[in-house]
Image (cartoon, rainbow, N blue to C red; front, top):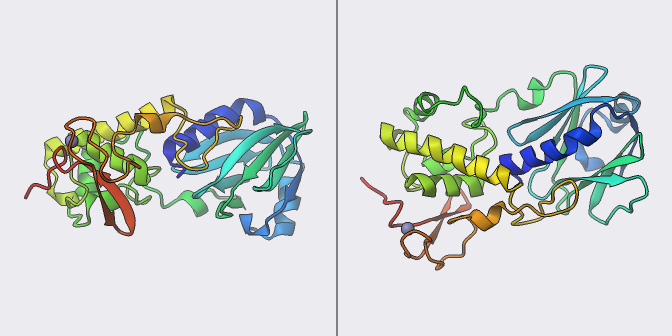
Length: 274
Ligand SMILES: [Zn+2]
């Protein structure tokens, strides 16, 4: 959390307000936010630049600057970027404020202080190892088939692996596997071509649906205007407590740990198979 739909929503909703804006200053309340370069370099290379664009890669936000460098932000578990006027007060969880011209501010809010910022010339030094974007045209069922071949790991461990596919985390992996009818412990290579097609379609459907609902506010995620997303109201299994009933067949949803993360699934709709 936040995953691709939340980060995509933040990108879409910040973009019209920040492109062309000049960075007039930065207030840093938590130095641990800046991974690279040094704090002094971060200030001197960022302040005075204009923001020329904002894109998303996986769960990363990439702000391009007039000097050719990029400011990259990862919100990790609990981060949000709030768009504020210069008169707004920062709440106690705001770790940094990027002051823009026209009395606009971006507040980087993160209760668990896990978020990270990088200022680099080469964005690939941060995002270069990510797997394919699941909503781009190049991500076909054939690509998914190739990436699953010979993989013995459980499919539920592969989907949130950012080098396998970019942007999916625990909750959308659970949702996609439920929609595809695939048990989370199935190995990657055990999926039939029909199951891979179902999973491919399910991944795209759950992500597009969640973007349409502006992300899921199951934890601390906020849209840039401070409001909540509603994608979690559409969840079928993710974040359901064990014992809640499957919305399709009425069987109690089960929760099992896979690689130390809770996985929610319906044992009837997602049979383990052979
Ligand atoms: Zn079911």
